[in-house]
Image (cartoon, rainbow, N blue to C red; front, side, top):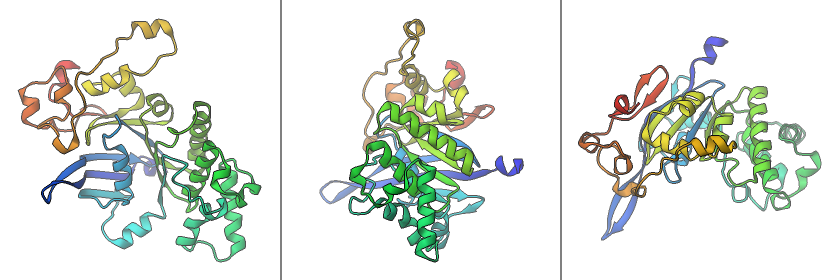
Length: 328
């Protein structure tokens, strides 16, 4: 069992997702939302994916589940590449998603039991209505909802309760892997803690594996085993959660982590905030070479000439930076 736990459940190799954008005069240009991203997620692990808004985090999650058709690269699930429609259909019984906005991701015309039961109907998982309803009530119990909530509509619930409905729907097909796309960013801080703790408990209870996408670095640290940092469609750093917080190597990761608020005023005063100059370039007109070079204080001509390889510089610590050894 331990050997199985250490094997990757999800492998992403050189994933690309480009969208053609109209630039006028019947011409289109590719917007490189995800550009050559590779990572693995072990069985039972939570991989946190962080970065500024617009860096391609959500697109990675959606492309991984084939909600967008990948432009290039390979997605391997449990040792099997996803290539045919049959592979993807089978994969969708094992992999689901919790969406960011609990207001727009639930159909206002459906009752809670219909929302949670929809995946069961699509995959024809229960022979009769009694077994289906029993499963729906079981799922509601998992996420802390009462049985009398089943006949209500989504607009009758608070944001936190709506997100619980979304999580119950994601659990309906008894998945092994869940993409959590900023599942708490639309919720109050007190409710965020409840939902995060519930996701933690469900992982232990049901043996789930998560890709946890967020921009709140404190939330990511609490729930993740490893953390990956993205910038402008590229993966720039990947390491264990503790390692990336205590010893970030990429200049962008350092800047990102310097912005995390610290509850101790003495430590907060001693911490130096690394403020980046300039704005994030448009992914339509990304800089040559390293995408971060236009804002990086260590950038050289080599950074403009070529994209640094995403390589392991210490055990389990991957970085894409030409000068990582000099600035580390």
